[in-house]
Length: 367
Ligand code: ZN
Image 1 (cartoon, helix red, strand yellow):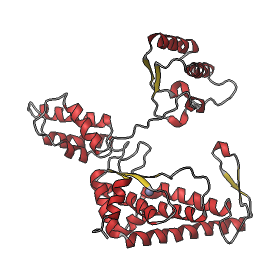
Image 2 (tube, rainbow, N blue to C red):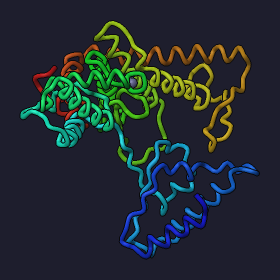
Image 3 (tube, rainbow, N blue to C red):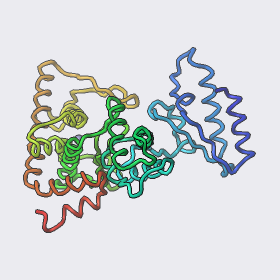
Image 4 (cartoon, helix red, strand yellow):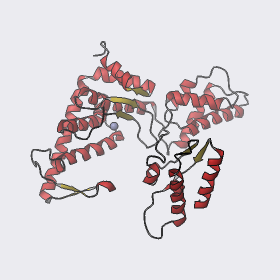
């Protein structure tokens, strides 16, 4: 903390180039400046100095600046502009293969029996972070010692998963087998509905490794090229795709879970915007029913209509989503064999690419 310390740090870095400057927990100094008078002066000066130093860096190619944070959303936007921290590398929880490798690294530090099936242990510890995996290895060693053995064996590892998971259960999402299966079907539901409709962006990745954001799974769709205009059909298809997760759960398990809450929020927002902002409903036509307040500050919208109209809007939103839900459900019903095949594959692999998804989708024998 302190502008002079930052100056000094960069002076040293330039002298020692080539080198890497690593700032851990950058949010401590890099928090968004709020512009309030009487704010935290020292912190703002430190940040300003950091920004200035990073700007004067074009001719110092030998210095790389890295920083880590758990709260990227709280950072000052100026820090993330081109020329400063211009690349973000999200470190998510490890997938199956990653967990296996992390376990193997930590296991080198303890004495363990030969032929431990690390893949099996990794599979059982779905959703565990690197630190938790290290802990599992530690617990395994302790368990062996407690039982008077010199080496940790397979069951030591397997038992210690439960010890560690029980300790973390409240805080982190470590999924049971059944939950994992539900999430797999949910995500493939999204992906299949997207793939079976025209005008939707191709699926590039599906994963059921829980995200650090709290999401249990994720289906990534990436548009080809830039996209600024959306047609009514595309937006409807988007809503159907968002419904796909819940539809798959209902179709396969005959029950529904809390896993769709984010989808519901997004679908509702989109459906409402279609009616109140984009003039895409026949009942209201080209009438702005909502005013977007400040595009740059999140853009929350306020209604600009009578309360009777509000009621009608609510009904129209429900109807729009209902229709798209029915459409998504029908798509999944007609492609249930494929849904099964891809969900099982995803359940095994935890993360699959768009190509793998398309390959199974297009296989002749799966119909
Ligand atoms: Zn979902």
